[in-house]
Structure formats: C-alpha cells, structure tokens
Length: 143
Image (cartoon, rainbow, N blue to C red; front, side, top):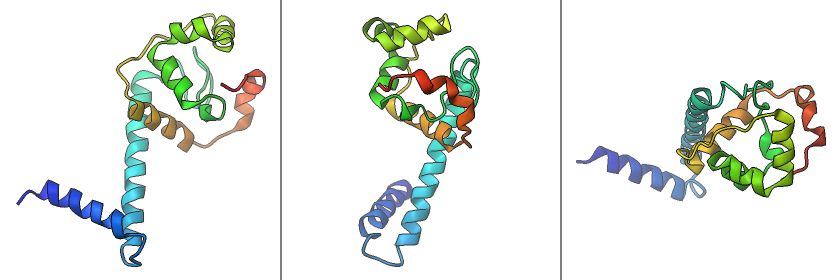
C-alpha cells in the first residue's frame, strides 16, 4: 500500500468534509496551521540564506527593511522586482527614485518561485512589528 497517496487522500477528504463535520474541523484547522508554520519556516530559511545580508528583518542594512512590505507594494510588483530589478527601475519612476536614494540596486534572483517569495513575505509578516522603525516609508508611494 502506498502510504504517501493514502495520506494525501486522507488530507483531501479532511478538507473536503471539514466544513460539514464537527469532528473533522479541529483536524483540518491543525493541518492548516501546520502548513502555515511550515511555509513560514521555509520563508525564514530562504530569507536568511539569500536576503538577510542586505535586508535585515526589522531594520535597514544595505537595503531597506522589508517587514510588512505588502502594505506598500503589490505582490506582482515585488515578484517583478525580485526577478529583474533593472527592468522595474527602468520602467517605474518610484523604483528609480528609491534606487537613486539608496545608491545601489539589488541583484536579480530569478531562481525564486512565486510560492517561495510568498513564504518569505509570510515569514517577515510573522515577526513582531514596530512601526517606528519604518518611518522611512512615510514618503513612499504605494505600488
């Protein structure tokens, strides 16, 4: 018997019937919370392996701190910028202004999938937030 397939089928059934079964709801909730924690931990590993050298988690380094960046930037903008920052800067006046202000542009990271980027953003959003550390964003335009 293939236990991997059985496990996936069991999880699918739990999610399918969890809304109608009072006994399944706690199980479905626990599975969802476990998946969320796993995604956040994957995001933490990716972020600390690739981004943390420049973008500290709660304060600026070479690059700006990125906690709660989705309040200011759409996911598509973030994704495009990570894939090809030079292209975004050439097409977007706000990006061009911020790069000029910083004095440097980050390298491209085309190896990341959208899910990996979402995981990193979820990790950043899971950290304690102090809005006083983000006063530099007051003059940012939302994109």
